[in-house]
Length: 327
Image (cartoon, rainbow, N blue to C red; front, side):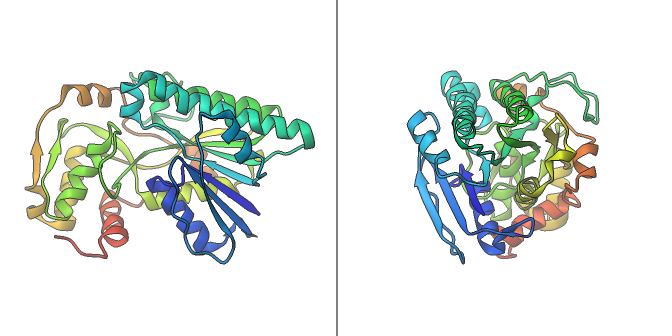
């Protein structure tokens, strides 16, 4: 089985690639080839099968056609411009997040019409497809009405995925990822970045800035659980989905204050004292239009599982990124 990960140089892409290399299978089927692609060369993990790393431009039709011409059995599409950057750069956000995904689907359609090619296509969507006012929790029937360009781009791609799947051109599944926390490494341009930084930096003895109120609530999953979601989606028997191919993932609902309390329980008062409150109206305005929590019954019935607690999310970061040490 040939698996292709697009956006493989990103944090989730790297962790997913490492998981696939380590396990060597999806749904009991052996992986015999792994292709990792991004705008910069991804790191190829050691594996018992060939791992190819490729640079490509999602906005270049020729590059996209060449990627799909490799005929992967499973495509996991993580490539995207993140929320804050998509809001700041309107053209770039639509070019990558919408037009790039459409190029992928059209390249698959061309191959399908030529020889019946129909891969599993796992699309990383976002809870940003929903917009306020929200019920709490948000159920599976709640309407998609995003209030950001990023959310709009993801919502349109979800509709495309449904339609291309309905027509038998692709075997698609979209998973709306919660905000991933704690993200390792340096901050990115996502408006949600502070949710990670107020935990990540204090855990290594560094100061962090909190731009919103402690009462802000949101929906979270650890990087490890996000990888679980993607692997499970790749293995899922999609006839269970019916015509609605996109699912909200289960997660942990927590306020910023509850995040900080969990940090104190796991790492102590020294860590929480490093959080500096500096209100930012722009970020607060973006976050105000985001959902707080979900009742992800469809996903749970299909075997998707959330982290056990926010304390566990912090402990996963300490184990996976800090060798079990704090300070």
